[in-house]
Length: 468
Image (cartoon, rainbow, N blue to C red; front, side, top):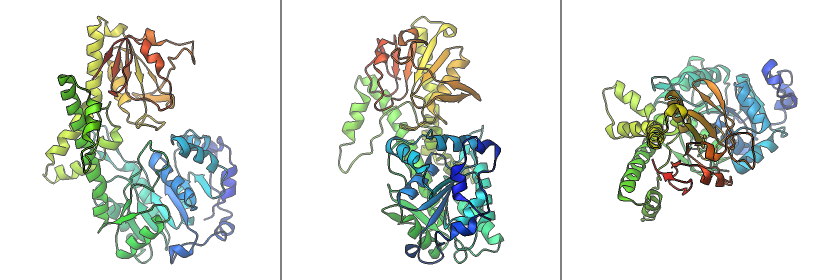
């Protein structure tokens, strides 16, 4: 198998749809430019492959490149590859600029062919995991990716699963298939788990902060993974096993769900008492040794709080166990978009508007602050619920041009007449629902909206302002 990196870089975007991106006729020439890591990672030039270039995978790939590691990014979605190559990949600030600069870097390559892992010493699997329609964990994409990696893995490689999954997934999806191929894990290949810790929307963090948690099949696996990941992070925290590393991610997700649900509850209490919920949260966070601050909001993207705890809860339920506090927190987080849609209904009805004649503007459509994508964002469910009730809905987000609502594309609008004089102005909407703001973007036009439902709890704007 061969990989011509320079040919890959020279392809036009249109070729992604019609031609294979990878050509295999120049492997020997390419491999002579570097040394595969079979021994000491400090003595060789590392080449890494990142499988899955969603936000986490792409951030990891950029962190590897920043550390001087020759990197190939593998993504099977043609549309995602086009977005990355065109600079519309959703990385914030300096990371976005860095990605645009990387497109001309011969040591940073994009491909849609999983066989490219053959060239790598370190393979990071960063495929996102989701829920099915019944909100049960869905590992289909991760299973396919791991099966491909196991099929094309070779001796000497270190394979690290960096996706949210069940406890036991790394062993089941990677270690066991490799052993079935006759590769001895811990001797021929090295398998580890390092759960994702990239913070979406926070520039320049990549894999550098917070410390990476790593668990391996054997001590040799742990040592090899720690050495290689140590090229790009200042600290690696070793745990005793693959299962311990997987559990860390689920623990963190459940912890966040509980705290976010608590923040929602306290915001309701603050509104009842006539005090500012954000002011209270910020003041409470000053208490030594430091209370974690969770301010009320429109909700959290389903793949951050809604998904992670379910990879903990579902296996427990199957074994007849419960985690009642986490279960209730997940229910509260899941219910947040529904509750906001109901609050919007209430405000429209109070203003004597028939829902079928009402027009609503949803402001802020990203799944995370600073991220240019709307997958699983609270805005999606809110829009779907309002449309089901007959409300005419538009959305605005300067970095999210399109959302998928009930499987159909919905394009954003710009209600600021200084930028777009052809559409509806702020005063033409019966209600604006402010879910999130983009830093540096001017939202002064919101003052002209008749009613604003401020789900950020921070913006005193609109002719009349309401809280959830």
